[in-house]
Figure 1 (cartoon, rainbow, N blue to C red):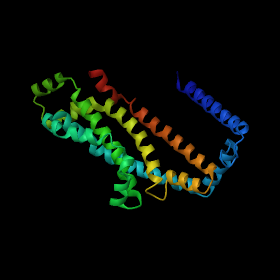
Figure 2 (tube, helix red, strand yellow):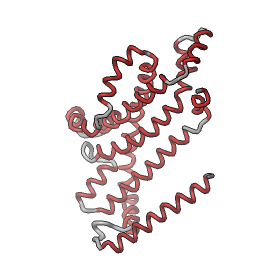
Figure 3 (tube, rainbow, N blue to C red):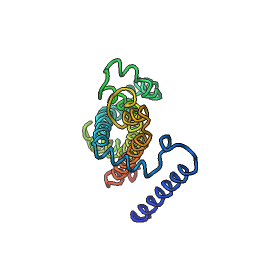
Figure 4 (cartoon, one colour):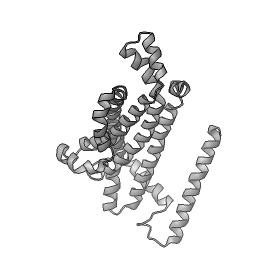
Amino acid sequence: MNQVNTTIVSIFSFSILILLWEVVVRFSGWDSNVFPGPFAVMISMGELIGNGSLLKHTVASLFRVTAGFYLATFLGVPLGIFLGRNHIAALLFNPIVNFLRPISPLAWIPLAMLWFGIGDQPAVFLIFLSSFFPIVVATTVAVQSINPTYFYVASNFGFNRYEVISKIVVPAIIPSVITALRLTVTIAWIVVVAAEMIAVQSGLGYLILDSRNGLRMDYVMDGMIIIGIIGLFLDNIMRRLGRIESATWGIMGQ
């Protein structure tokens, strides 16, 4: 299915969703303040855009996700490569990583608030935790899955450690790492919204919580819509990264 057909199908799907939303609002009997319809939500979206609140909260959330996710990537990928290439280090650190990985980042909220207070730092820390361990595990597994023949050939040609990493390991793991990053950035986006409901006073999560307290359900739904749109945008970016020519080296070489 080409890009045009995909776009048409997507528009049709969202049109059906909006139609069902309107039907449910009209026939559910719920008060519009409790469950606002698409038209009311669209009007309130214009209000948030007009007064600058939506842009402010969206930028705050994106900043925290970017900072935490990039930090997790820059630390997690090298650590994963190290653990994948060093058997002893893997035996020592893998139990710790696998112990910490299943712990929900939200469980760290009390400690994050105690350590960093209220502001960007606790949210960035939580996003870092949500991204770091999955990236480390995925990178380690990808390195350990590389065909050993490549390393034998590299040894015969006298490759040093840097050349092995840069010319064999990194190109070979790109497809797996990009897949892991695609999944992880979605988790990070979910975590930042939850963290902003507790640990900060800005961002889309805070907008939703503050609007709920003020009984502005239309603003709540506006925040949810923007979260979904940005989530689609982030996923699309990662899918496009997975299509670049260099990202297929590992698949073709296996």
